[in-house]
Image 1: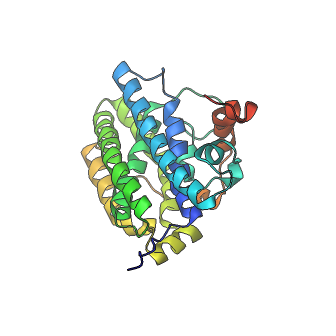
Image 2 (image 1 turned 90 degrees about the horizontal axis):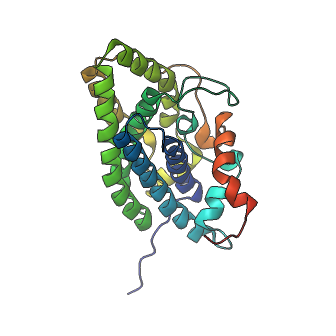
Length: 266
């Protein structure tokens, strides 16, 4: 009996997942050595490693489909900003709206709010992708789900602790959600690669997990004595390679060493 061919998710869909994990992992890594307390410094570093590990598995899967000289390293380090397909929210810096060239102290509330909004999305997404017709992607989803459940628990605990804390911590958490919530509109607008993957059973349109995400957000913010921020406004388009000015600065730092020494062995 002939073996049944396994379907493979579209490359651009896999890159959308991988790029989102990589860029958020890089952002969280910026807290290394700067965490508010030692335990949180280590926790964010571990979350960053989980996300980068997820990205590696996805990039390896993509490289196997592309063939040639493609590797996880070429996909991470040798693509320019306009080639990335990550959600815009993950590339934003750890503070409120500023130009890419501006500097500001890292705001832990912004980091926690973003991690919460993103992990609340990824948990139901990885759950759904465990049933992907792409067996490799389904296996990656099963591993990633376990890690994302921890990411969600960590971020949720801090949202509640800070939201229901002092007047200052509550104000800063509310401002962080007010700043970030409009970027979540992008979650629910399916990109062409999402539509393709959902149609052939290898992927999931994010809109199908919207109810679960909204329930998690509403319940957590209610417990944190915070209001659900207005999500209306500009709709970002990172999934379609339309990025903020911040991504190029992040990639310059992340990719600099590899580009200075291409082909180097570590």
